[in-house]
Every structure is written in structure tokens, then in C-alpha cells.
Image (tube, rainbow, N blue to C red; front, side, top):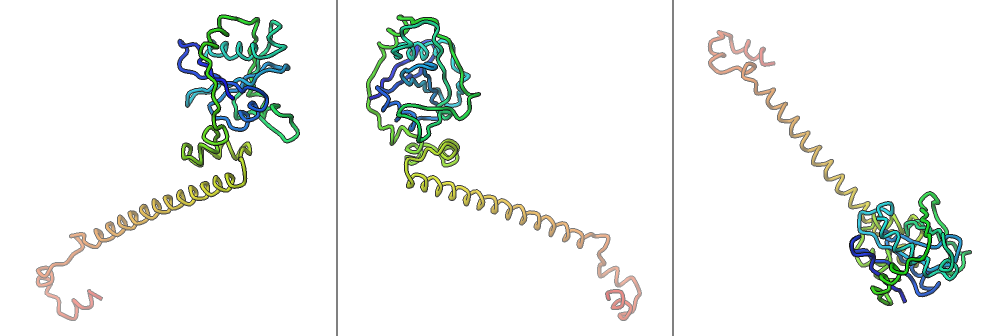
Length: 247
């Protein structure tokens, strides 16, 4: 089960979501989107809250209002964090989440600590929580399929180059079949690129040859270097002399 919320309307159309428990959190860690930003109370147990950005946006582009909505939702869904003031909430792009085999269910690390931001939440604001809860919708999405990057690639939503940027870098293949599918697409794109490059090179080469032939032909046909029948007749040269000139 995944809970979906809508951020404050004046900030634009933004969706915030979180898993029901640590098992849903584990699924969300595995099968996110490049546009997702992950939020969590720092050094405390809490829900894993995600914000889905618009395409082309970076996580440094999030407005203060939307940040506050996400941070308040995380704090409210932390047993310990909800009871205290001045709680720090950390957030980072989904692609920066690091999961290893030794980690517990729902536990994550970061590939790059420099891509982690912190926001301080002084206290719970019930008006924000109540507004968010009024937009709350419960769904059971197919995270392993259409919602995952691998699933999106296999369904044709992403090209191989975009998919590989996120999947191959972080090893987010679900199984060997998906790994081979992405690798095969990469090979096909590379071959297509090489064919197009060779075609362009062949066209350029033929054009250069044509231009060279035209320049050579024009050189042979310069009027000043040509001899007409009239010129030959007026030269008073014998046939033998003309043959010698030709040779």
C-alpha cells in the first residue's frame, strides 16, 4: 500500500507519497523514478516520504512551501520525531540512495553525501498535516512493473541511454533478463549510431570526390588552353609538326 498526497496548490501540481511500512519502503527504494526525491527524519525512525518533481527539475529547485509540506509529513510519521521539536529532515534524489545486501529492510545509505540536504523542522504544524491528509489517497501500484525504471524502459517509456544512466550506474536490474534486455538495447543503439556515422562519412566522401572531379574537369576545359581548328589552320605547321606538338 502506498499513500499519495498533493502538495499545497499554490506551489503547482506536485505529488508526495510514502509506503505503508518498511516493506513498502523497500519496494519504493528499488523501483523509483529519476524525478523522485527521498525525505527522512535524520537519525530517527520515520516514514520514507517521496516528492515527484517535474521533468527537467533538480532537487535544488524545490520551493520552500513544498519542502515544508514534505518535511512536516515526515516528522508527523515518525514516532519519535513527532514528539520533539527542532527535528532535522534529510532529503536527496532517489538515484542517490544506496542499498547493499548487508542492510536491513527499509535501510538505505547514500552514494554521494554531498547530494544530501537538510531542513530543520521546529515544530509540527497541524494545519499543514490536516491539509495534506485531506488529499490522501491509498493505492497499490505495480512498483515492480510500470513504476520502476526497468519497467518503464521495457514498456518503451525511456530510451536505452536514459535507462542505462540510472540503472547501469546503480545496478538496479531486477533480474538477468532485464540486464540482458538493457545491454541488448545498448548494443543496438551503438550499432545504429555507427551505421549513421558511416553513412554520413560516405556521403561527405562522395561529395568531396564530386567536387574534386568538377575542379579537375574545369581545369581541363579552360578556354585559354584549348586549340581550335581555326588556330591549327592558321599556324602554317606541317602535319608532322602538329603531331610532334601533340606528343
